[in-house]
Length: 411
Length: 140
Image: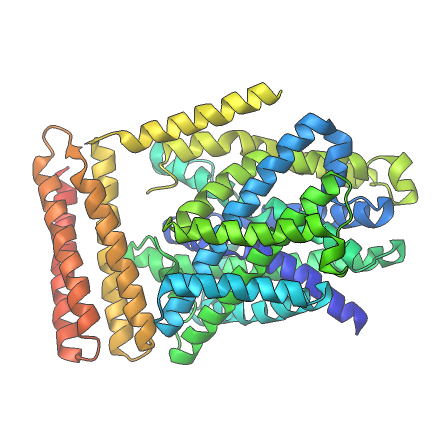
């Protein structure tokens, strides 16, 4: 039973991590433009996040060093601090986008004013984080996010072309013209980035320490990382397929959250629509909590201060103050009226740029026999981890130029 | 290293702000705007059917139409701040008029969600908007 409940860390991390606002709209758009052709980006992103999530969990458990302690050690104080500032700015932007997205979804559900719902959402999430122990936070958002399964059921009920879907696992390097080719690669980089968002590994490695994992739990670590990520990946495939089957034939390019959401309920009646909205609310709320808590974890781990959600809030003032500040600032940003999808576009693209500064130190530490002892990376882990890191660096270099030349993926 | 990162970020921000200020729509950008307008029209048509089949809650229908109207309004604003490249004035005018028409239809639909006949009429109007946009696209 303990092992079963432990899986919720992986589920919450993955659902809140890569089935968030950005992924819901971005992947549906990718399906609407390119059908199943970007399946390979989802498969690649899934493999990459499983590898690095497992590595982060293993490093945290064996070396007792979560991500930003590792970043500090490996990158040094100056570059590490730059990575910390960039990561927390991205966490803040993402948190603002998710809270804004939840307000939109609740407005669709209740008809109440969006700004009022935005404040209520921030207050509710802050209260949950303050009152609940870490394990209950992950269980609440992990299990409630499972309602998103309605998207997978909707996708299957449309009878996808499985052969075409399988063909999408092979990248198609060029499209009909240069513009389409650039947009295709923009979406490939975006999907890959959204699946590898840094805050997932910040949250996951901190979570492993919050749950007091020991080296005896390392088998569970792989299972949790793999199960959570595969579930998130399945839902991402469903979003892509819905875009391909519902929107592509009508030349619809979904530009707003409510369009992507109703795709998940399209073949069914009202209750499915409510379930689709509720599932999205749960995933976005999970992402908002992950980003806010990651803000606190990162600062404390970098400066070697005490942290922990299960410790009394007053005994970890910097940790508590940082995540509270993250929620408040995120709400302020969202209240300015900037649309959540604009924020999320920024966080996906700039998140890709910052990514190597997190993943490189993790790979280095996981490969260090002096630190990891018998739990050091195998040759195979090093090769695969190295290949993923090279891809991350290439995507990081390509992200901003692609965003500029494609006007953020405008078809 | 830090200076290089700073320069890169500053350069990116400048490049992005430069992009957001330009006023003349190239042919590709005009095509992209027409594609966006056609997409919004097609989506509205599908959603009208969805509402007619009573599969959306009232709050969802109203909210979604509000967001669609907001998106159309944003595109209209963007278009009003631009001018077409020489020779594409006609397509530009047609696009602008169809954005206005779509915006008006979305408001009508939002007020008549329970009126099946009004929804059917609105759907016909939107189909015509889409057809006009197709014609505009073919002239570019």
